[in-house]
Picture (tube, one colour):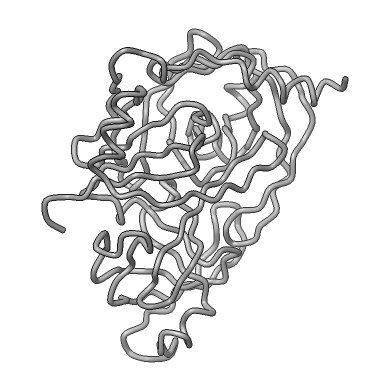
Length: 292
């Protein structure tokens, strides 16, 4: 068995919080860029603040941190950012990673030098919660580790939508669900690493949006890795969860760009909600707000 395949297998070894008698909550914050930030521990003793990014695919740490905690090389993986950029990511096994009550041993993580340049410790992905349903309470700013009983209560009180999983050999995981952009259907990535919604430019003519109209702001910029990007910012009447159209952002400020997905749903969609992510049962559950 290769070192890489062994690493994938030991990734599954963790201490689960799901079997506990009561839910455990840990606080999170929203930083100035609109990202969810949570406390974590790596290597058993190094406390960090990491971006909790459900669109990241895999855990990524700064190379300097991986070196500090003696990460062991474990191969490479090629992944794509939503703008189509290919990243060839070196993989390492680190001794331990924990978030709240969840403790994972011998964890496969990616190394990304951009994090050192930005003075960021790391990114925690949704992959770590394959077997542990979690709720992001965007009102109370808490990450809640659900139990069997509390999850059943979420299902009874909330609105559910089917999750589609993009699972790359057990190493990287992205989650999608069905949304409506205006009256147009899309399979959208759920991405707490994005503050706003991003929509593929092919939706613009479908929605009668002229990219040269006065209500559309064209923005030319470079991505975090230096690739050129063009964004068309405008308002759309609403974005809603297809399985529960009453859960919507209306109006919605969106960026149309040449992304590889139909759309990406950022943090602003859930700003008044509790979002439960249950990967094992392929669903999200949204506790409806009092008002929107």
